[in-house]
Length: 223
Length: 126
Image (cartoon, rainbow over all chains, first blue to last red; front, side):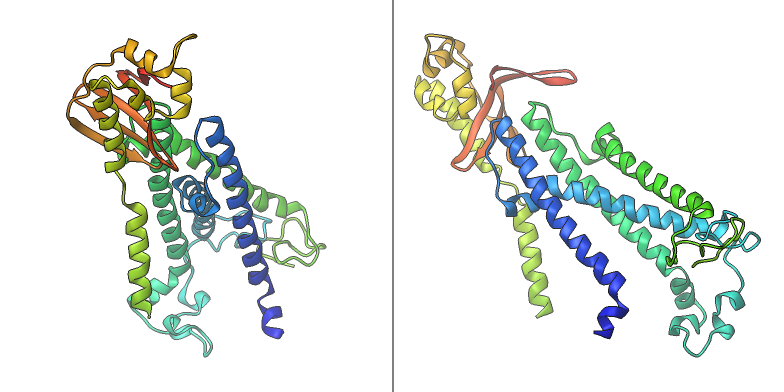
């Protein structure tokens, strides 16, 4: 019971993610089948839909933008600050910071992760592992979007009596960039809102907010 | 156990990604073979339902409409492209578009000529 409580945030998001994905699959299949019937095709089964390029591109385009958002947030907050935001470091602390501040190498503590206590490639890799993980998932999702997107787009083009196009033509097409940029703009607006609104607004008890009584000028404080 | 799962996954992926080009080619060739053999009824049976319904003018049936169109010879296969349930089959004398239904591939459009930046202009289409 205590393990569930200790991991309640992750578990809740996992359940919400799976429910949303299942809901997207169901709603997506119903929408896809509506279109199929309008265009003279036949309705497809749930299994056929969730293994289709149409479903894959819709999932991948959202994944890539979310991981891009976190990649940018993680990387830009190393070098850029926003005075007053709990999402930012204090002005003056821009950069990768010293080994002592990062508690690595000789400054590592007894309970520091093993690769924080060593030198060389393992320390470099571990020191950038969060950004690398987000960046890798972003690139793989974007690649998956391009491959599934090309398949779905070519199926539409053939249905419209048009020639299919190759992958390189697809990734420079308005369709690919429309899908990508419509997701990017919303993610970037959400981060901007979080960074700026958290300067002036509060959510009592949330570590994503400053304490209710903290001054607007206080940076790098969570409540 | 882990290896057998990987093999099974790879098999599913390869099978899922393999493309059936023989089906649409066979349907396109049979369509033109029926026309060449003066059997427009058999050619009509290979059309998608919506295409077959839309083809005749008032007072005509599908076979009469196909005979009047006189599509010409299909010729040998030059290219086939399949994406999902849609296919394009290029023969030496014609380009056809097909859709995969539960009972097989059916011709959606035939007698098609390319139009720059626009859909093909087809003699037979839905």
